[in-house]
Amino acid sequence: MSQKITEEEILNLAARIAVQAKIDGVKKSQIENLLTSVEISSDPKISPNVVALYAYRQAERNEIGRGTAVLISEAMSRLSEAGGGREEARKLLGFMKWIYESLGERRMPRVAVKELKFQDVLKILKGG
Image 1 (tube, rainbow, N blue to C red):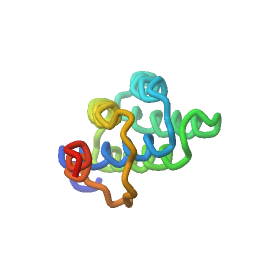
Image 2: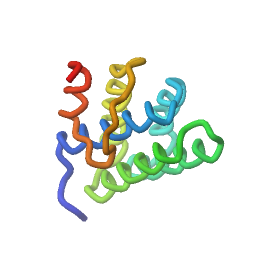
Image 3: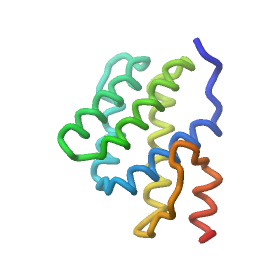
Image 4: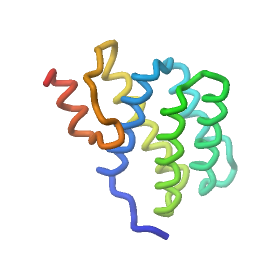
């Protein structure tokens, strides 16, 4: 098992997914569906893997972008490696939803999504 995941890392992962989802033009309903997918498995430890599978399914159906699905999968893998399960996946996707909604219709500046931090998103939201 890898080292425990911090809330700061969860926020950073959520920020990357939210920004990529905005770039990919993901609809708000798909964000809600991702949150719902956390609850599908009866085993809380498997929930992150189910979310990753669901994200790839939705990408294959052109409901979300492939880039978004990859970031979701990477985030869910990180949660699993750290011993996280349903609760951590729910928290990460909840933060992702808030960030996604906070970005609204604003145009995204060019950013290196893979290196993006939650603090960078706060700067974007402040207009800087």
